[in-house]
Length: 356
Image (cartoon, rainbow, N blue to C red; front, side, top):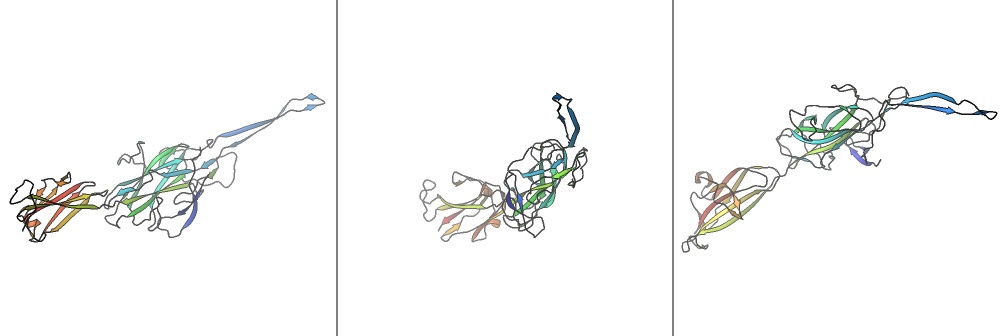
């Protein structure tokens, strides 16, 4: 089995431990624990060259022991993108019972310690709250609130896998582009009684050939040690970085000599300014405020400001809501507010001036 050195960080811990982690491939659990293996030897011999009746030995038998192992893996290899203030945000894992017996699996989730590395290679800068763990009950790989209610895995067969979700709330505020690492730990528990979580397994000290002994065989995970009957893997919640791209255009609408036919920027001409704000981030941007000073040598055209218009073909569309001069113009500048611009969308503000 290939293994690589990995740093171990426990939530709230300041100590750094170096452990061995990683599994090249998940081996088959092998012969079912509790299987009885029996064998009898036979001895043949002769006396004075006369063959005698073969003699059979007693029956030697033993019971196959439990090789306790569990593997947790993060699904997708990328962070869950969130925004501050969101609730019930999901990260996804798989949990495989690599034990050679049917087992219950106890589950719990925790935050990565602040300042510690996440399993995805970033540094934890804030913590999520209300951490919960749910098992995918209908096998669709998607968290369904009110449907996925189990908090542990009941009677998981040898070699079988279940999808498990960490569900958490994102705090109202935090650092820009924040990263919150979380990790899921699965613990091998006693199986055999459907509908209730068995006790955590303990490792047998002595070998009794007539009973199922337990040997811990798991590798180390993100936040656990080798051969401790548990395994963990990490994921993270990444605050989406939203940003705005702003482009401004000036279009001559009319002039005193040519009217609206090929107008020129001569004194008396009307020029429309179009300011297009595009959200190039992954989350909506809100409270988008724009301020634009009326340039020298021009005069603002009364009641010409329109807000939250659309943009097409590199030009402002003549739409949007007309803003009153009382709210949008103070005598020297235009100021408008757009409540929200969705990811990938563009909204415009436009107004007109006359060339002095």
